[in-house]
Length: 250
Image (tube, rainbow, N blue to C red; front, side):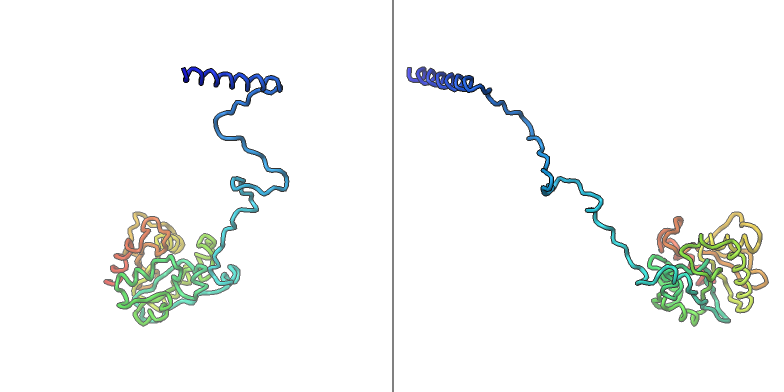
């Protein structure tokens, strides 16, 4: 009996509320499910965290000053001297000086170049050395030269005329100093030299000691993979070391 009276009272209360709502002219509010709609900020209002970052708000990419304020144009005016003398066992030949080598004033000074790491791993010198020791290496019978002396950001910036004339100058240099072995640092470098000097690109090329000699000399030719870290065929220093060991044994 008590429960029945309670339910009847509850129904009466609900009916009174509905009647009052209808008399006021308003309808009951039915809430929709889901997230509330986004409210657009008024003009001048501070954007929320969800506001897209504009181009002006994007973080500026930091540039690294590799040359400590020295411009590329200034570096391209610098020359990298040969490290050469009579009686060398090995003359390492590159295509031309890069910007970092010109900046440091030493051969193969670029931080990503594998040359000095391969020299050390092969035990060619017998003590740890870096590009700062390139002059000292002449006392160990190792010298350095390039086909073209002009400094450029890339070897692609050289002209065929420069390479042809540089190759002739290199031959004359080798005739004077007579190193036992001319080591070309990279297949591409040797192919350029061979095409300009012998008039054709060598077929069935293999790295290592070549059958030809430098024209007009008794200097043997050895071709090793490029010491550049960008050498796709030999991307790691460990992949190139055994060629340095071969040179050491010649």
